[in-house]
Amino acid sequence: MRKIFVFAMVGIAVVMMGFCPAGAALKAEYKLSSNVSETSGHGQATAYFAKLVSERTNGEVNIKPYWGAQLMAGKPSNEFSLIRGGAIDFAHSSFINWAPQFPQGNLFLLPWFISGEPDKYKALDAIEHGKAGKMIEEMMDKQGIVVIGWGENGYRELTNSKHPIRKPDDIKDLKIRVVGSPLFLDIFSALGANPTNINFAESLTALQQGVVDGQENPIMSTIISYKIYEMQKYITIWSYNVDPYAFVVNQKSWASFTPEQQKIIRECAEEAGKYNKAMCRLGLDNGESKAFLESINAMPTMLPAEPYKFLEQSGCEVAVLTQEEIAAFKEKTAPVLKNWIEKVGPELVKAAEEDMKSVR
Image (tube, rainbow, N blue to C red; front, side, top):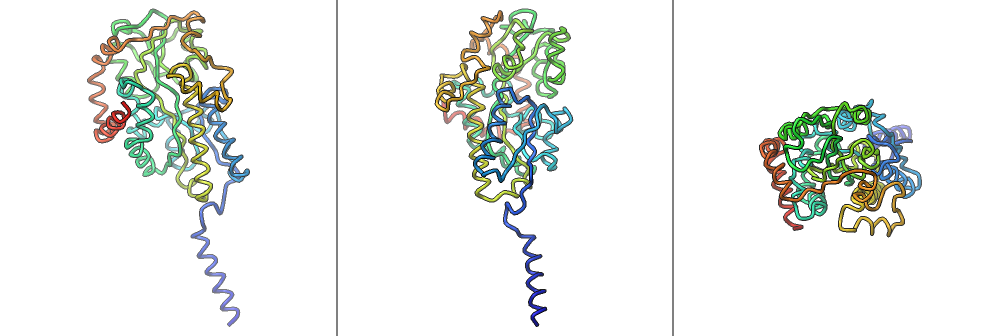
């Protein structure tokens, strides 16, 4: 009888193992994918996130960043599938890279959809933390990916080596390097340019050698961080779309953490996201980013506090377009916007419009 009891208890224990609470079997290392270098602005935010998690979980959760697209064999477009499949645990990355598998992420990339608001930063934050952001998080969750925080790469501006660009005719026939996204190709084709997809790792060489005339990227995280201003004299500030970064985690990896660990990791992602955004917006917003970085004693030493002034002192011509000038570009790309709203999803776009309206 005693033997039967023992065997029964063992059997119950084995069955219960299938219902172990989250956090019972942590990995020695959780892989985090990054498409940038550790020294870049959002690379520093990624490292900050991993450091916070280690400290606040007393070393129980070890997240190791892998830089420069190492985990995706140099192909950012593979990242979404690798996270979804569990080959990658965490990522701090861009919806641009995920667009082929997650077209709803193109919401942020619609031409002049968000930047046309009175305060483009408040508008972006409202979307991320509003109804539209919730919808995106739910869609991602269905794909097996959990959004735990929002960071930023920044609003995308235009540079070229030929001449100032202030109207659509100025961009006509220029060979512009763009990311491998159909939406980007459609936007620049509509403007009369010759968009060319080149991997970012190769694009700097292409700019140096004159293979392309220009490129589009955010000011702080790319144009300044990667010294593109040394190769491109003319800079057009038009903020035609924005590149938000998201902190995400594979759903099964997420389930391995206890509720308390999940709470800590989310808080760390939110803090790192604020830090990331502040560095991308430094000198470009109303001063909030500078005040925030000073308050946490984290003013970057490698980035200028006044980016436009820095670029002009470096020999660049910076053209900050007026809303009237931008209107001409918006008119040219209106058919692209209409077409891509259908691809992104009218309901999601409507939710984003309502979010932005709430902070006007």
